[in-house]
Length: 463
Image 1: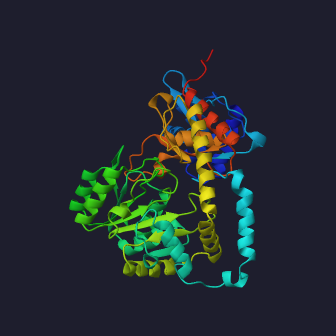
Image 2: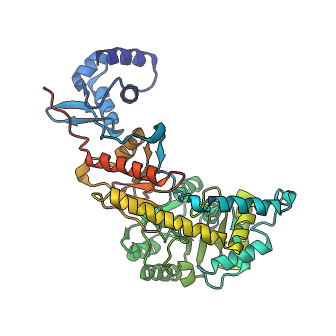
Image 3: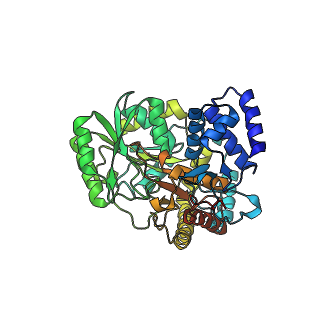
Protein backbone atom coordinates (compact mmCIF):
# COMPACT_ATOMS: atom_id res chain seq x y z
CA UNK A 1 0.00 0.00 0.00
CA UNK A 2 2.99 2.33 0.62
CA UNK A 3 3.79 2.43 -3.11
CA UNK A 4 0.16 3.33 -3.86
CA UNK A 5 0.21 6.17 -1.32
CA UNK A 6 3.26 7.81 -2.96
CA UNK A 7 1.54 7.52 -6.34
CA UNK A 8 -1.65 9.04 -4.92
CA UNK A 9 0.21 11.98 -3.36
CA UNK A 10 1.79 12.78 -6.74
CA UNK A 11 -1.55 12.60 -8.55
CA UNK A 12 -3.27 14.76 -5.95
CA UNK A 13 -0.59 17.44 -6.28
CA UNK A 14 -1.01 17.54 -10.07
CA UNK A 15 -4.81 17.51 -10.33
CA UNK A 16 -7.44 20.22 -9.91
CA UNK A 17 -10.21 17.65 -9.45
CA UNK A 18 -11.90 17.60 -6.02
CA UNK A 19 -9.70 15.45 -3.80
CA UNK A 20 -12.50 13.16 -2.58
CA UNK A 21 -13.44 12.25 -6.16
CA UNK A 22 -9.82 11.79 -7.20
CA UNK A 23 -9.08 9.44 -4.28
CA UNK A 24 -12.09 7.31 -5.31
CA UNK A 25 -10.81 7.38 -8.93
CA UNK A 26 -7.37 6.27 -7.74
CA UNK A 27 -8.83 3.35 -5.82
CA UNK A 28 -10.77 2.32 -8.94
CA UNK A 29 -7.67 2.66 -11.16
CA UNK A 30 -5.51 0.64 -8.76
CA UNK A 31 -8.12 -2.12 -8.66
CA UNK A 32 -8.25 -2.27 -12.47
CA UNK A 33 -4.43 -2.43 -12.81
CA UNK A 34 -4.22 -4.86 -9.86
CA UNK A 35 -2.16 -2.61 -7.59
CA UNK A 36 -5.06 -3.25 -5.22
CA UNK A 37 -6.54 -6.73 -5.02
CA UNK A 38 -9.70 -8.20 -3.51
CA UNK A 39 -9.61 -8.19 0.30
CA UNK A 40 -6.63 -5.78 0.48
CA UNK A 41 -7.04 -3.67 3.61
CA UNK A 42 -7.00 0.10 3.22
CA UNK A 43 -5.69 2.56 5.82
CA UNK A 44 -8.12 3.97 8.35
CA UNK A 45 -9.63 7.38 7.66
CA UNK A 46 -7.26 9.03 10.13
CA UNK A 47 -4.20 7.22 8.74
CA UNK A 48 -5.01 8.07 5.14
CA UNK A 49 -5.73 11.72 5.94
CA UNK A 50 -2.27 11.93 7.55
CA UNK A 51 -0.54 10.10 4.70
CA UNK A 52 -2.12 12.30 2.00
CA UNK A 53 -2.18 15.58 3.89
CA UNK A 54 -5.98 15.83 3.51
CA UNK A 55 -8.50 16.62 6.19
CA UNK A 56 -10.49 13.81 7.79
CA UNK A 57 -13.80 14.90 6.18
CA UNK A 58 -12.34 14.79 2.67
CA UNK A 59 -11.04 11.25 3.15
CA UNK A 60 -14.37 10.19 4.67
CA UNK A 61 -16.17 11.54 1.56
CA UNK A 62 -13.67 9.71 -0.66
CA UNK A 63 -14.35 6.37 1.05
CA UNK A 64 -18.11 7.00 0.86
CA UNK A 65 -17.79 7.68 -2.86
CA UNK A 66 -15.71 4.53 -3.37
CA UNK A 67 -18.31 2.56 -1.40
CA UNK A 68 -21.10 4.04 -3.55
CA UNK A 69 -19.25 2.80 -6.65
CA UNK A 70 -19.07 -0.69 -5.18
CA UNK A 71 -15.27 -0.65 -4.83
CA UNK A 72 -14.83 -1.04 -1.07
CA UNK A 73 -16.68 -2.24 1.99
CA UNK A 74 -16.28 -1.66 5.71
CA UNK A 75 -16.89 -3.89 8.68
CA UNK A 76 -17.05 -2.47 12.19
CA UNK A 77 -13.97 -3.58 14.11
CA UNK A 78 -12.16 -5.06 11.09
CA UNK A 79 -11.52 -2.05 8.85
CA UNK A 80 -12.03 -1.13 5.20
CA UNK A 81 -11.29 -3.57 2.40
CA UNK A 82 -11.31 -3.83 -1.36
CA UNK A 83 -14.39 -5.86 -2.24
CA UNK A 84 -13.80 -9.50 -2.97
CA UNK A 85 -14.77 -10.96 -6.33
CA UNK A 86 -16.93 -14.05 -6.77
CA UNK A 87 -15.40 -17.10 -8.39
CA UNK A 88 -15.86 -16.08 -12.03
CA UNK A 89 -16.23 -18.31 -15.05
CA UNK A 90 -13.70 -17.29 -17.64
CA UNK A 91 -15.23 -15.63 -20.68
CA UNK A 92 -14.45 -17.11 -24.03
CA UNK A 93 -11.45 -15.49 -25.73
CA UNK A 94 -11.62 -12.62 -23.26
CA UNK A 95 -14.81 -11.34 -24.87
CA UNK A 96 -17.53 -9.54 -22.95
CA UNK A 97 -21.19 -10.52 -22.82
CA UNK A 98 -23.57 -7.64 -23.48
CA UNK A 99 -26.89 -8.18 -21.71
CA UNK A 100 -27.73 -4.47 -21.65
CA UNK A 101 -29.55 -3.52 -24.85
CA UNK A 102 -32.89 -5.26 -25.23
CA UNK A 103 -32.42 -7.05 -28.53
CA UNK A 104 -34.07 -10.18 -29.89
CA UNK A 105 -31.95 -13.30 -30.28
CA UNK A 106 -30.54 -13.95 -33.74
CA UNK A 107 -31.52 -17.51 -34.73
CA UNK A 108 -29.15 -19.08 -37.24
CA UNK A 109 -32.03 -21.11 -38.70
CA UNK A 110 -33.45 -18.17 -40.66
CA UNK A 111 -30.34 -16.02 -41.19
CA UNK A 112 -29.50 -17.24 -44.69
CA UNK A 113 -33.13 -17.09 -45.79
CA UNK A 114 -33.36 -13.45 -44.63
CA UNK A 115 -30.10 -12.59 -46.40
CA UNK A 116 -31.11 -14.25 -49.68
CA UNK A 117 -34.57 -12.69 -49.68
CA UNK A 118 -33.24 -9.20 -48.93
CA UNK A 119 -30.79 -9.54 -51.85
CA UNK A 120 -33.59 -10.69 -54.16
CA UNK A 121 -35.91 -7.83 -53.15
CA UNK A 122 -33.22 -5.17 -53.60
CA UNK A 123 -31.98 -6.60 -56.91
CA UNK A 124 -35.53 -6.55 -58.31
CA UNK A 125 -36.05 -2.89 -57.35
CA UNK A 126 -35.12 0.42 -58.95
CA UNK A 127 -32.19 1.37 -56.72
CA UNK A 128 -32.46 5.06 -57.51
CA UNK A 129 -36.15 5.02 -56.65
CA UNK A 130 -35.16 3.72 -53.22
CA UNK A 131 -32.65 6.56 -52.84
CA UNK A 132 -35.21 9.30 -53.55
CA UNK A 133 -37.64 11.07 -51.24
CA UNK A 134 -40.82 9.04 -50.79
CA UNK A 135 -44.39 9.79 -49.79
CA UNK A 136 -44.34 10.64 -46.12
CA UNK A 137 -45.74 7.88 -43.94
CA UNK A 138 -45.12 5.26 -46.62
CA UNK A 139 -46.43 4.65 -50.11
CA UNK A 140 -50.17 3.96 -50.46
CA UNK A 141 -49.38 0.28 -51.07
CA UNK A 142 -47.12 0.07 -48.00
CA UNK A 143 -49.79 1.72 -45.84
CA UNK A 144 -52.41 -0.80 -47.02
CA UNK A 145 -50.03 -3.63 -46.05
CA UNK A 146 -49.33 -1.96 -42.69
CA UNK A 147 -53.05 -1.48 -41.97
CA UNK A 148 -53.73 -5.15 -42.77
CA UNK A 149 -50.90 -6.18 -40.42
CA UNK A 150 -52.15 -3.89 -37.66
CA UNK A 151 -55.74 -5.13 -37.98
CA UNK A 152 -54.70 -8.20 -35.96
CA UNK A 153 -54.16 -5.84 -33.03
CA UNK A 154 -56.50 -2.95 -33.91
CA UNK A 155 -59.65 -4.31 -35.60
CA UNK A 156 -60.88 -2.37 -38.64
CA UNK A 157 -57.59 -0.46 -38.92
CA UNK A 158 -57.64 1.63 -42.12
CA UNK A 159 -54.79 2.87 -44.30
CA UNK A 160 -55.90 6.49 -43.81
CA UNK A 161 -55.33 6.06 -40.06
CA UNK A 162 -51.92 4.42 -40.53
CA UNK A 163 -48.39 5.79 -40.81
CA UNK A 164 -45.09 4.05 -41.48
CA UNK A 165 -42.33 5.67 -39.45
CA UNK A 166 -38.62 5.34 -38.71
CA UNK A 167 -38.83 3.41 -35.46
CA UNK A 168 -40.94 3.64 -32.32
CA UNK A 169 -38.68 6.18 -30.63
CA UNK A 170 -39.27 8.76 -33.40
CA UNK A 171 -43.02 8.20 -33.07
CA UNK A 172 -42.89 8.79 -29.33
CA UNK A 173 -40.96 12.02 -29.79
CA UNK A 174 -43.48 13.32 -32.31
CA UNK A 175 -46.46 12.22 -30.22
CA UNK A 176 -45.15 13.87 -27.06
CA UNK A 177 -44.75 17.18 -28.90
CA UNK A 178 -48.33 16.82 -30.17
CA UNK A 179 -50.01 15.85 -26.93
CA UNK A 180 -48.29 18.01 -24.31
CA UNK A 181 -46.65 21.42 -24.10
CA UNK A 182 -43.60 22.21 -21.94
CA UNK A 183 -44.58 22.03 -18.28
CA UNK A 184 -47.62 19.83 -18.89
CA UNK A 185 -48.01 16.28 -17.57
CA UNK A 186 -48.10 12.78 -19.02
CA UNK A 187 -48.76 9.80 -16.75
CA UNK A 188 -46.46 6.78 -16.99
CA UNK A 189 -45.87 3.53 -15.15
CA UNK A 190 -43.46 3.59 -12.21
CA UNK A 191 -40.92 1.69 -14.34
CA UNK A 192 -40.66 2.73 -17.99
CA UNK A 193 -38.63 2.51 -21.18
CA UNK A 194 -35.74 4.95 -20.57
CA UNK A 195 -36.32 6.64 -23.93
CA UNK A 196 -39.55 8.16 -22.60
CA UNK A 197 -37.63 9.72 -19.72
CA UNK A 198 -35.09 11.18 -22.14
CA UNK A 199 -37.77 12.59 -24.48
CA UNK A 200 -39.72 14.14 -21.59
CA UNK A 201 -36.56 15.77 -20.23
CA UNK A 202 -35.72 17.17 -23.66
CA UNK A 203 -39.22 18.59 -24.13
CA UNK A 204 -39.62 19.74 -20.49
CA UNK A 205 -42.71 17.57 -20.07
CA UNK A 206 -43.47 16.31 -16.56
CA UNK A 207 -43.86 12.55 -16.05
CA UNK A 208 -46.26 11.54 -13.28
CA UNK A 209 -45.55 8.05 -11.95
CA UNK A 210 -48.46 5.62 -11.53
CA UNK A 211 -47.63 2.66 -9.24
CA UNK A 212 -48.33 -0.87 -10.46
CA UNK A 213 -49.34 -4.19 -9.00
CA UNK A 214 -49.30 -7.67 -10.54
CA UNK A 215 -52.14 -6.73 -12.96
CA UNK A 216 -50.65 -3.47 -14.20
CA UNK A 217 -50.93 0.25 -13.36
CA UNK A 218 -53.21 0.81 -10.35
CA UNK A 219 -56.45 2.27 -11.62
CA UNK A 220 -57.29 4.32 -8.52
CA UNK A 221 -53.88 6.04 -8.72
CA UNK A 222 -54.44 6.90 -12.39
CA UNK A 223 -57.88 8.31 -11.62
CA UNK A 224 -56.52 10.38 -8.73
CA UNK A 225 -53.87 11.80 -11.07
CA UNK A 226 -56.53 12.72 -13.63
CA UNK A 227 -58.59 14.45 -10.91
CA UNK A 228 -55.75 16.44 -9.38
CA UNK A 229 -53.43 17.20 -12.31
CA UNK A 230 -53.94 18.43 -15.84
CA UNK A 231 -52.94 15.13 -17.39
CA UNK A 232 -52.63 15.17 -21.17
CA UNK A 233 -51.94 11.50 -21.87
CA UNK A 234 -51.13 8.12 -20.38
CA UNK A 235 -48.17 6.19 -21.79
CA UNK A 236 -47.86 2.44 -21.28
CA UNK A 237 -45.96 -0.58 -22.58
CA UNK A 238 -48.73 -3.14 -21.97
CA UNK A 239 -47.24 -6.41 -23.22
CA UNK A 240 -44.02 -7.92 -21.79
CA UNK A 241 -43.26 -4.53 -20.33
CA UNK A 242 -39.75 -3.15 -20.47
CA UNK A 243 -38.25 -3.73 -17.93
CA UNK A 244 -40.60 -5.65 -15.59
CA UNK A 245 -41.89 -8.18 -18.21
CA UNK A 246 -45.39 -7.52 -16.79
CA UNK A 247 -48.36 -7.85 -19.16
CA UNK A 248 -51.37 -5.75 -18.20
CA UNK A 249 -54.41 -7.98 -17.68
CA UNK A 250 -57.55 -7.71 -19.83
CA UNK A 251 -59.63 -6.37 -16.94
CA UNK A 252 -57.01 -3.73 -16.12
CA UNK A 253 -56.78 -2.65 -19.78
CA UNK A 254 -60.52 -2.12 -19.83
CA UNK A 255 -60.38 -0.10 -16.60
CA UNK A 256 -57.56 2.11 -17.93
CA UNK A 257 -59.50 2.73 -21.14
CA UNK A 258 -62.60 3.65 -19.12
CA UNK A 259 -60.74 6.24 -17.04
CA UNK A 260 -59.02 7.74 -20.09
CA UNK A 261 -62.35 8.13 -21.89
CA UNK A 262 -64.06 9.67 -18.85
CA UNK A 263 -61.29 12.22 -18.34
CA UNK A 264 -60.66 12.72 -22.07
CA UNK A 265 -56.94 11.91 -22.03
CA UNK A 266 -55.05 10.25 -24.87
CA UNK A 267 -53.47 6.80 -24.48
CA UNK A 268 -50.09 6.04 -26.05
CA UNK A 269 -50.00 2.24 -26.36
CA UNK A 270 -46.37 1.34 -27.08
CA UNK A 271 -46.78 -2.33 -27.97
CA UNK A 272 -43.14 -2.91 -28.91
CA UNK A 273 -43.25 -6.55 -27.76
CA UNK A 274 -46.89 -7.24 -28.67
CA UNK A 275 -45.93 -9.56 -31.54
CA UNK A 276 -44.19 -12.04 -29.22
CA UNK A 277 -46.93 -13.76 -27.16
CA UNK A 278 -48.77 -16.61 -28.85
CA UNK A 279 -51.77 -15.96 -26.59
CA UNK A 280 -52.64 -12.32 -27.24
CA UNK A 281 -54.88 -10.05 -25.16
CA UNK A 282 -57.13 -7.38 -26.60
CA UNK A 283 -55.15 -4.19 -27.09
CA UNK A 284 -56.24 -0.98 -25.40
CA UNK A 285 -56.67 0.43 -28.91
CA UNK A 286 -59.25 -2.25 -29.65
CA UNK A 287 -61.16 -1.21 -26.50
CA UNK A 288 -60.89 2.57 -26.96
CA UNK A 289 -59.82 3.27 -30.57
CA UNK A 290 -61.07 6.86 -30.51
CA UNK A 291 -58.45 7.98 -27.94
CA UNK A 292 -55.59 5.49 -28.39
CA UNK A 293 -52.43 5.80 -30.45
CA UNK A 294 -51.29 2.24 -31.13
CA UNK A 295 -47.60 1.77 -32.02
CA UNK A 296 -45.99 -1.43 -33.24
CA UNK A 297 -42.39 -1.73 -34.41
CA UNK A 298 -40.00 -4.23 -35.93
CA UNK A 299 -36.73 -3.15 -34.32
CA UNK A 300 -37.59 -4.68 -30.93
CA UNK A 301 -38.96 -7.99 -32.19
CA UNK A 302 -36.74 -8.61 -35.24
CA UNK A 303 -33.57 -6.53 -35.04
CA UNK A 304 -32.56 -3.03 -33.97
CA UNK A 305 -31.48 -2.11 -37.51
CA UNK A 306 -34.95 -2.78 -38.95
CA UNK A 307 -36.16 0.66 -37.96
CA UNK A 308 -39.70 0.58 -39.27
CA UNK A 309 -42.71 1.24 -37.05
CA UNK A 310 -46.44 1.28 -37.75
CA UNK A 311 -48.85 3.71 -36.06
CA UNK A 312 -52.62 3.39 -35.92
CA UNK A 313 -54.00 6.84 -35.06
CA UNK A 314 -57.46 7.53 -33.64
CA UNK A 315 -58.65 9.34 -36.79
CA UNK A 316 -57.47 10.47 -40.24
CA UNK A 317 -57.22 14.09 -39.01
CA UNK A 318 -54.99 13.07 -36.09
CA UNK A 319 -52.95 10.93 -38.49
CA UNK A 320 -52.17 14.03 -40.52
CA UNK A 321 -51.26 16.03 -37.39
CA UNK A 322 -48.80 13.33 -36.35
CA UNK A 323 -47.44 13.17 -39.89
CA UNK A 324 -46.60 16.89 -39.71
CA UNK A 325 -44.65 16.43 -36.48
CA UNK A 326 -42.84 13.36 -37.80
CA UNK A 327 -41.91 15.15 -41.01
CA UNK A 328 -40.31 17.90 -38.94
CA UNK A 329 -38.29 15.53 -36.74
CA UNK A 330 -37.40 12.58 -38.98
CA UNK A 331 -38.19 13.67 -42.59
CA UNK A 332 -39.22 10.13 -43.62
CA UNK A 333 -38.62 6.49 -42.85
CA UNK A 334 -36.11 4.55 -44.93
CA UNK A 335 -37.58 3.36 -48.24
CA UNK A 336 -35.23 0.36 -48.15
CA UNK A 337 -36.39 -0.95 -44.77
CA UNK A 338 -40.01 -0.16 -45.67
CA UNK A 339 -39.60 -2.21 -48.85
CA UNK A 340 -38.14 -5.16 -46.96
CA UNK A 341 -40.82 -5.12 -44.27
CA UNK A 342 -43.69 -4.87 -46.77
CA UNK A 343 -42.33 -7.73 -48.86
CA UNK A 344 -41.62 -9.91 -45.84
CA UNK A 345 -45.16 -9.37 -44.53
CA UNK A 346 -46.63 -10.20 -47.91
CA UNK A 347 -44.48 -13.34 -48.39
CA UNK A 348 -44.88 -14.59 -44.82
CA UNK A 349 -41.14 -14.44 -44.07
CA UNK A 350 -41.91 -12.13 -41.11
CA UNK A 351 -43.94 -14.99 -39.61
CA UNK A 352 -41.03 -17.41 -40.07
CA UNK A 353 -38.64 -14.92 -38.45
CA UNK A 354 -40.99 -14.33 -35.55
CA UNK A 355 -41.50 -18.08 -34.99
CA UNK A 356 -37.72 -18.67 -34.90
CA UNK A 357 -37.15 -15.76 -32.49
CA UNK A 358 -39.89 -16.98 -30.15
CA UNK A 359 -38.52 -20.53 -30.12
CA UNK A 360 -35.05 -19.21 -29.33
CA UNK A 361 -36.44 -16.93 -26.60
CA UNK A 362 -38.27 -19.86 -24.99
CA UNK A 363 -35.02 -21.84 -24.92
CA UNK A 364 -33.12 -18.97 -23.30
CA UNK A 365 -35.73 -18.31 -20.62
CA UNK A 366 -35.49 -22.03 -19.75
CA UNK A 367 -31.70 -21.64 -19.43
CA UNK A 368 -32.25 -18.66 -17.11
CA UNK A 369 -34.70 -20.70 -15.00
CA UNK A 370 -32.12 -23.46 -14.61
CA UNK A 371 -29.13 -21.22 -13.84
CA UNK A 372 -30.96 -18.72 -11.61
CA UNK A 373 -33.04 -21.33 -9.79
CA UNK A 374 -32.06 -19.82 -6.41
CA UNK A 375 -33.02 -16.29 -7.49
CA UNK A 376 -36.69 -15.78 -8.46
CA UNK A 377 -37.07 -13.46 -11.45
CA UNK A 378 -39.88 -12.13 -13.64
CA UNK A 379 -40.09 -13.17 -17.28
CA UNK A 380 -42.41 -14.07 -20.13
CA UNK A 381 -41.80 -17.49 -21.73
CA UNK A 382 -41.65 -15.95 -25.22
CA UNK A 383 -39.82 -12.76 -24.20
CA UNK A 384 -36.09 -12.21 -24.34
CA UNK A 385 -35.40 -10.19 -21.21
CA UNK A 386 -35.82 -10.92 -17.51
CA UNK A 387 -36.27 -8.70 -14.44
CA UNK A 388 -34.21 -9.91 -11.52
CA UNK A 389 -34.99 -8.56 -8.02
CA UNK A 390 -31.94 -8.59 -5.73
CA UNK A 391 -32.62 -10.07 -2.28
CA UNK A 392 -31.41 -8.04 0.70
CA UNK A 393 -29.53 -11.10 1.91
CA UNK A 394 -26.98 -10.79 -0.94
CA UNK A 395 -25.69 -7.46 0.33
CA UNK A 396 -25.77 -6.04 -3.21
CA UNK A 397 -27.46 -2.86 -4.35
CA UNK A 398 -28.54 -2.88 -7.99
CA UNK A 399 -26.12 -0.12 -9.05
CA UNK A 400 -23.21 -1.85 -7.30
CA UNK A 401 -24.13 -5.21 -8.81
CA UNK A 402 -24.31 -3.74 -12.33
CA UNK A 403 -20.93 -2.06 -11.87
CA UNK A 404 -19.33 -5.19 -10.45
CA UNK A 405 -20.70 -7.34 -13.28
CA UNK A 406 -19.21 -4.92 -15.81
CA UNK A 407 -15.81 -5.61 -14.25
CA UNK A 408 -16.52 -9.30 -14.94
CA UNK A 409 -17.41 -8.59 -18.59
CA UNK A 410 -21.20 -8.82 -18.10
CA UNK A 411 -23.46 -5.86 -18.89
CA UNK A 412 -26.87 -5.53 -17.24
CA UNK A 413 -29.04 -2.47 -16.48
CA UNK A 414 -29.78 -1.30 -12.94
CA UNK A 415 -33.35 -0.36 -11.97
CA UNK A 416 -32.62 3.37 -11.62
CA UNK A 417 -32.51 3.68 -15.43
CA UNK A 418 -36.23 2.83 -15.57
CA UNK A 419 -37.57 4.45 -12.40
CA UNK A 420 -39.94 7.42 -12.60
CA UNK A 421 -40.74 7.81 -8.89
CA UNK A 422 -37.16 8.24 -7.61
CA UNK A 423 -37.60 5.07 -5.57
CA UNK A 424 -36.25 2.27 -7.77
CA UNK A 425 -36.51 -1.30 -6.51
CA UNK A 426 -33.29 -3.26 -6.06
CA UNK A 427 -33.37 -5.12 -9.37
CA UNK A 428 -31.62 -5.41 -12.73
CA UNK A 429 -32.81 -6.08 -16.27
CA UNK A 430 -30.96 -8.81 -18.15
CA UNK A 431 -31.29 -9.21 -21.91
CA UNK A 432 -31.02 -12.80 -23.13
CA UNK A 433 -30.91 -11.94 -26.84
CA UNK A 434 -28.69 -10.05 -29.24
CA UNK A 435 -25.66 -11.56 -30.99
CA UNK A 436 -24.64 -13.84 -28.11
CA UNK A 437 -25.05 -17.61 -28.46
CA UNK A 438 -26.95 -19.85 -26.03
CA UNK A 439 -23.64 -20.95 -24.51
CA UNK A 440 -22.55 -17.33 -23.99
CA UNK A 441 -25.97 -16.53 -22.53
CA UNK A 442 -25.64 -19.41 -20.06
CA UNK A 443 -22.06 -18.40 -19.28
CA UNK A 444 -23.14 -14.85 -18.45
CA UNK A 445 -26.04 -16.05 -16.31
CA UNK A 446 -23.70 -18.37 -14.38
CA UNK A 447 -21.45 -15.42 -13.55
CA UNK A 448 -24.50 -13.45 -12.37
CA UNK A 449 -25.66 -16.37 -10.21
CA UNK A 450 -22.19 -16.82 -8.69
CA UNK A 451 -21.96 -13.09 -8.01
CA UNK A 452 -25.28 -13.13 -6.17
CA UNK A 453 -24.43 -16.22 -4.17
CA UNK A 454 -20.97 -15.11 -3.12
CA UNK A 455 -21.04 -13.10 0.16
CA UNK A 456 -19.00 -10.19 -1.21
CA UNK A 457 -19.26 -8.19 2.01
CA UNK A 458 -17.37 -10.83 4.01
CA UNK A 459 -13.59 -10.59 4.16
CA UNK A 460 -10.80 -12.83 5.28
CA UNK A 461 -9.90 -12.47 8.91
CA UNK A 462 -6.64 -10.65 9.54
CA UNK A 463 -4.32 -13.03 11.32
